[in-house]
Length: 506
Image 1 (cartoon, rainbow, N blue to C red):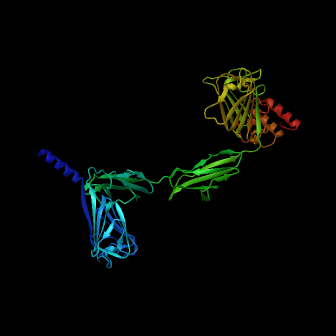
Image 2: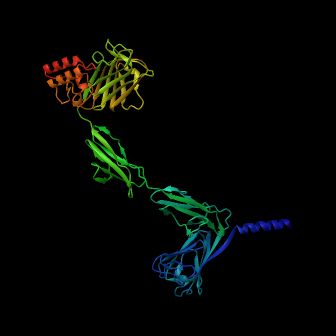
């Protein structure tokens, strides 16, 4: 007996997992929007949707126009049967035989047409107008064993502008409803049909439903913050160039429009790369709605086709306090400075550069045109092959000659730095600049008027007498070092006079 009861209990449980339910549509009770069957209309009841391409579902009876389609769909279980009770009988006006489609039948003399099958939705066509006084939909509804709460995406948080929000439920065929407010402060429930947009700070609550079951509530808050727009980025970054190229602009802020100007006054929307053929400054900004980014700019300078060379020779060019005395020294020639952190200048004609140690340093700086080449000549056994480019320095450094005694750096930079892994002895360095040395470095132009004349001799003597060798608008200590010994002395006066008498400043 107990065994029989147990089997009966199991059978009842299995039967309870599925329960055929009916959803009945009555004109005037459940209705759509149209009272005339000239446009699409739709109505929804308990997870079942009935629509027509030309239908009047707010009329009584329901009307489906000739040549239109009627669709029945369910989100709460597959449809097993639909009974259409019509105003007319079979072969009469508005009767059930005016519907046709797969799975649909109607009997002669009856005013009821029946669709049968097992589907989430189906479609019927209309040969002539159909008028229904009742529609009964039978669905096989699965009893929910575990109904999970819906999930917002994004799951709350800050936003700017407007934000698209979607809802999903992992439980199959579950319906989702949401409203503005909390669980305790419920607003009007809205059936979720698709993404919606948030434009202001808002709190939403959502719940999943399936049959008579309902999930836990889930509440999120979307907080609107002021819109910020990132400034555009130039590619390539500003700098010098020798050949024509194009500048592109990008903005990290989604949906931002980029604008550029060549005078910081007249702005154009950026669409295509900007061609650059000569010296130019480009200003750029980005906008989202009425919000603008900061204005940024990039300056591109065309390199002169004229180059100039500055030669550092250990027999002639001496650094301060470094002749035969180990220490740090700088040698300035025109716009270029050669600096050694630990070394000396030998009377035998080489720059000794020691390292590696904490004081090691060997670099070149130009305050004029960029450096595009540095050529080295060194002594056998202390060759420049022991040099390498310091971290972060662009360009290429190649070594040649017997045992690596010759080296060449090529690139485009205002500052070039080298590391050394053992002592290097260099006899000569030739630095090539991407342009002329310029009037600020005109040897002999002591008073900086752009010419070398007897007035430069007078100015030089005045500064020697006063002991004032500071740079000013009327005095250039670099141009005054005509003797090129890295100092201003009477030797420069003598050399300058010789230059004038010989008719040049070469």
